[in-house]
Image (cartoon, rainbow, N blue to C red; front, top):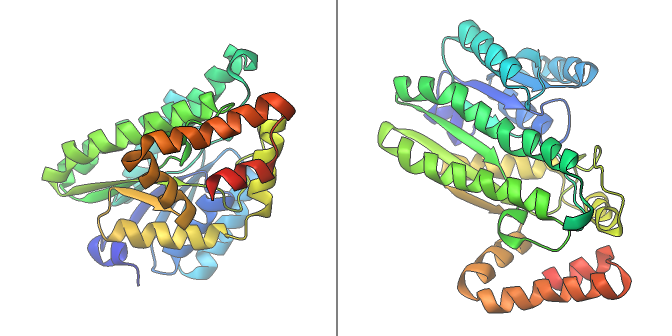
Length: 285
């Protein structure tokens, strides 16, 4: 049994981006411990399929169609969930999109789209559930950011900016809520198998390289989901994974000049001949 299941015995979770990838794996991992799961996504058929898997695994599924960038819709769904369950024990703001382009080539419409999902979706999730967490004086919030929140690679300004915002929001909430017995974790992973690039709007080699890194990663979303839930159960604020992400994280904090030189290698290769997935792997080693 997961530590979170022991610490939060009423087992009521609300998870965005539940129809596939990491969100789906969170649902299935919690279902094994008998959680009631408010599962949200824009993919109705995907939700229905995961609902069946949750129930077959031993959990209770409450599916909701939700565009996390839609404030009015998010508030309505959050209220429906709280009305159905009487409270919340675990919030996982997981829904997000991956995209990027050189700053001057990425349109302002795309910026609005990226910020709406990756940043404001997390803001809304926290905003509509934090009052209940405060009233209960119990619970846990897990926000999914990215190693991009501290790496700021060239061509990734929109994505990095939104994930840095998620990290900052999470750290602030950690200090605000910890005295009330409500914990907060922010997750900063590098590449693993998921469908985050499915809706990418960028068309450059940057996005093609990032997509290839995701596709070629030997790390499964199920492995990442279990590790996140395990580390969150230990009360960790910063969850950085896998090993290469932890290396990057500490290098950026302890040896920032060395870290900047590595990112400049990416930049120069990008300007000279475009960027390949091999280039990124070499720099991250």
